[in-house]
Length: 325
Image (tube, rainbow, N blue to C red):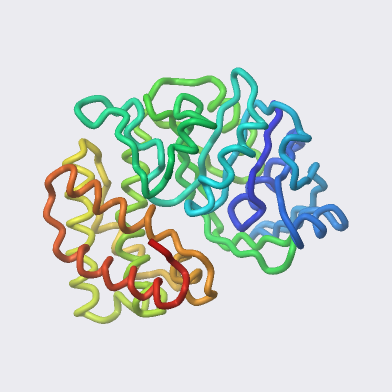
């Protein structure tokens, strides 16, 4: 199986390193300093169990690689429309594209059924670039539970002792190619679950990102510190209940939000979207915050707490230059 990982950041570099260490035929799309570092010294992934050093094929020209069996896209949501056409150069007739992204995925209403079937999400896919160049028939949803950071060009630090990936097709159909991908990732130290209800997995993480991301961005704090304040902990509970109500109105199970809040309360990790704000990087405001509220309006769900907190977090991002409408 030929696999290309598109994006050499914390998540993409981590997955590429795990795959390469297991002997998989993997290539990596990287840019600038990352590209030069991996070419010169290889890809270094520092895990709790040791250091993985590999030498995958690396390029900034996807079209040079030819068709792939699987493309793992691991760039943040704001960058997706711009890479739709480059990703298409990696696709053959049966290629799958696994989108390892946070928030509402651009393909969300593909194979959804009901009156919202194939509804487009213009905040996430302006001009239908992803729909046209990739097409949701190829798309696979992926929800990643892995904390990491880029500590230097070509060097990724994976902070979690346990790393998990949930994979699933939008239509919920079984797919032997996903089982094969899971079998390649598991020996490298990633727990992989293939599910027929990937939207449930999306919402289970998204609800906690709505809470942790918005409050983390507004306070500049890890959620452990936020949840230690009784007033903020109460607000977090309100936000989680509203997020779960959106999921349920759309026919999804967001999981146990009380357990999720408890995990947030024990976290010393600053949410990635808050890290982006502090570092002046583009923020995933649309995928994580604003599109979920668009979905709330579609499902006729009232979200007064989320409306207020998301509006404040969005304005904070605008002022910092990390978000443009």
